[in-house]
Image (cartoon, rainbow, N blue to C red; front, side, top):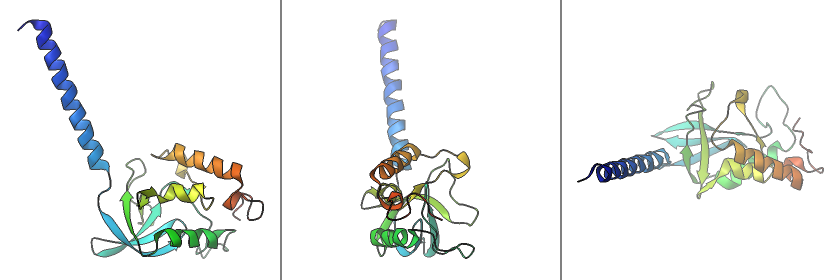
Length: 173
C-alpha cells in the first residue's frame, strides 16, 4: 500500500475515533436520572428526593423575587414566581443538569443545577415568562448564559411578568 493511502486511512481512523469519543462524552454529560420534587421552596429553589434523602436544589442562572428570606420583606412578584414554579414542578419528576463551570453545590450546601421537566428547561421558561431575572454569580459565565440573557431581553421588550408596568417594571424590591 502506498504511503499517501496509508496516511489517508490513518487520518480517517483518527477522525472516527475522535468522533466516537466526542459522542460518548456528550451522552455522559446528559442528565439521565429523574428525581421526585418533594417541595417547591420558592421560585428558584426546590427540594427533591435524591438517593433516598431530601436535597435542596438552587436553579442556576436565575433569580426570582424573595418570599422566604427572613432578612428581607416579600419582594414584588415573589408570590407569583413561587406559584409558577409550583405549577411547573410540584409533585412531578425532574432531571438535573450540573454545570462544571459553576460547581455542584453553593455555600448553603444546595445543589446547583439546571432543572428539566418534561424535556423543558424550567430555568429558561421562568425567565421567558417574566417570573425570573437572569442571574450571573460573581461575573462567572455558565452554559446557558446567552440563552437566559436573550430570554430576559425578550421578556423586557414584551413587558411581561416582572417587566410589566402593572407589576414591578423590572424592580423586585
